[in-house]
Amino acid sequence: MIEKINALLPQTQCGQCGFNGCRPYAEAIAAGLADINQCPPSGDEGIAELALLLGVEAKPLNPQFGEHKPKSVAFIIEQDCIGCVKCLVVCPVDAILGAAKWMHTVIAAECTGCELCIAPCPVDCIVMRVLPNQDISKVEKLAHAQHAKQRYDARCTRQTQEAMEKAERVKKQKAALLKMKSV
Ligand code: SF4
Ligand code: SF4
Ligand code: SF4
Image (tube, rainbow, N blue to C red):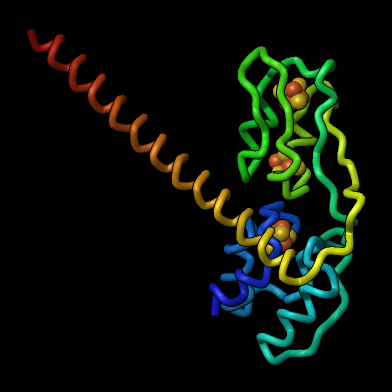
């Protein structure tokens, strides 16, 4: 059931539902710990799909969690970017390209519009741009969500791998230090 619920969520990973990503929200719904109307990017259409899956009545989006907005993507005003990397490290789908002290840019096709990069930017040079075509089919929506999920999962795997490698390096350094002290 968790997977079925997660498959209906937009995979924006924005956290507006009060959970750290779409899957934790799906887990909470399945466990009866969250309501079906807490995901602003899903909007009424997504809530209706969840209601159908769970055999419950649909209800309006709870405004406490935000409002359903038109689909947008982030855009970096490149001449103002100071290359601090703060946006890059928070993007859940690796949609930002850049390096320390270099200009950053958003790969628009990969941006889910989660807005998580906006707040960390110290010079306010990231703006959201509403996409001209809002009329996308259900099949396209599903394909976008699946693609975003793949990128998010890949990022999580990479971060876990990096953390493990770091832990291994620290372990080796400590072992080498102890060896030096004992000589
Ligand atoms: S897209 Fe919806 S379910 Fe996913 S994190 Fe955002 S609010 Fe939560
Ligand atoms: S570029 Fe910004 S708005 Fe787009 S997915 Fe990444 S963090 Fe979210
Ligand atoms: S947070 Fe802002 S200033 Fe820093 S790299 Fe990103 S766009 Fe540039």
